[in-house]
Length: 252
Ligand code: CO
Image 1 (cartoon, rainbow, N blue to C red):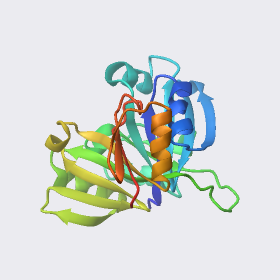
Image 2: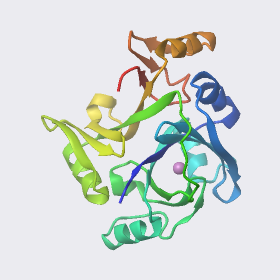
Image 3: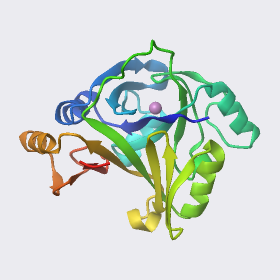
Image 4: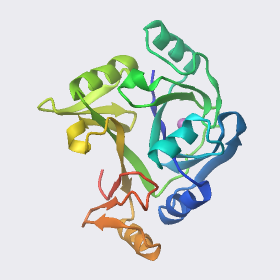
């Protein structure tokens, strides 16, 4: 059972450089930061509403994240779904013939984690995580919330059916069969034909909602962020957002 999008993983060249945009300009708060030598990464989780943003800086070239940075540059790397029992979830998926990278959960920044093989979800690298049990209490508020992830697919109908069958997501809207939207907790996955997004299969863009839109615009001006500004939304140039196609709007 999937509860929510736990986080979206973004590969960056240097964590401290990425902080200038994600923490200082956007104002996202740091949840935790750690170096994971066995995975060859320095990683940070930032609060983004119900979900988090995970920034990953490779500390070695011979890892998945190191090769990704070398080959594709900075940008969206994976999506992580939260499940209460990652061990049972990954065993069930394997029993159904789904290819995985981790047959057993291992410790990661988000808790006990396991990665599916990118082939399992049509080019989207999926991580499953069971976060450590923490004392209940109010979750800290954040100035921006993750709204949806855009996924490019050769056959959007087939990719939608795959995500529904693997994870039980429900469909929010159907638009002539060309696009579909799947609910994941309070977030969503928007699956679009790959020709709409420059032929890219897999994760292509991230949408967020901001409470203080004028404040965000001022922060962008102050910090020289390159972006296309509209009256109610802004599209950040990937060179300013570390390779991420990022849309931020003032409305849900
Ligand atoms: Co992750």
